[in-house]
Image (cartoon, rainbow, N blue to C red; front, top):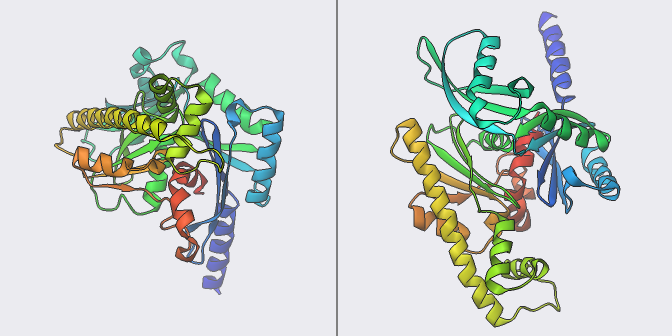
Length: 359
């Protein structure tokens, strides 16, 4: 009888936890991606639905917000909670070391440590942290996060404007950490680099045993920067530059063939862009190794729209001499039978949304 009652309590608790399901919404420049997770037969999270929209939800108009509402309703099946990533200019992520102290004092110490990196009053800076393994008896090592309260309010209002409740606003790096972790990539204790190549931001992160150790954006390395480089080198406007990128990626619409000369010039430009990318990645690896007094990283995982660039994965691996692979965030959270060739091709685009959607 007691065992039955305990089982009932567990079932109710489990049901309550899964009522906290949320839609993971990743806003990446001009694209917004949505993922909904459900509980599998084993109780583990499993991808139940996903989709994308060619809109920038942060700067959307009324028509675009209505499109989002319709897509979220179809994918969410009644869910009203949203977890969204934040990539605001005021966002800061730093490794810090302190003497052990009460929680409130620690948060105040974090604010003071951020003072040289922020503008405006520190009192309006919202901070948080995650502890790192290997603390000393009297000291604590953490990765601290901070962002202005105005930025948080801005993102909160965006979610509310589409009729949803913001349950979580997370840095892209911590969403990636959750995505990597749920797919079992951090279980070996090695130092894993995850690089997400986005529309206007590319983020370099290092993770180990479920902890985010290091995070740095790669300056001048993103889809928008590539388009600007093409515009300058090929002397064409923005529309033609993005069409050239689509043609290079094999997505050119029928009836819009690209000239052989244009594609040849594009190859040269892309080569320069790839070189800049690996230079910034090597700088990031060096900075991490110096900060943690280690000699190397063990593996590189690439995700985001950049993995669709022909030859990018191979170029990174061969140039940096580190084992490099494409990160498939659906690997362990989607039925293998559902992972068709097309699903696996687009899966790296959903790495952030998967991490956000995990209850």
